[in-house]
Length: 98
Image (cartoon, rainbow, N blue to C red; front, side):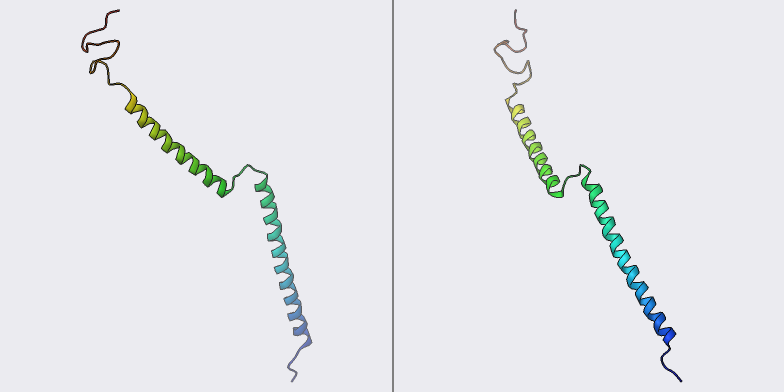
């Protein structure tokens, strides 16, 4: 009884060759799609993560500064009319003469 059959041996080699070829084709297709995607995305106006984080930090700092300035302005505002004397109305509660 023969333990090796030439037909099955050739068939196994051919199947291995097909598997290797298909695997190579898959890798090349993936690399090609990856390059196409990079080219497509590169043509659009997207920002990098680092740029986004930098602008986000700048916006947070600007918000903090605006809040501080609002508080400073509120502290500098005069009291509402009728509560305290002013240069235009030295007697609160009475209207100034014109």
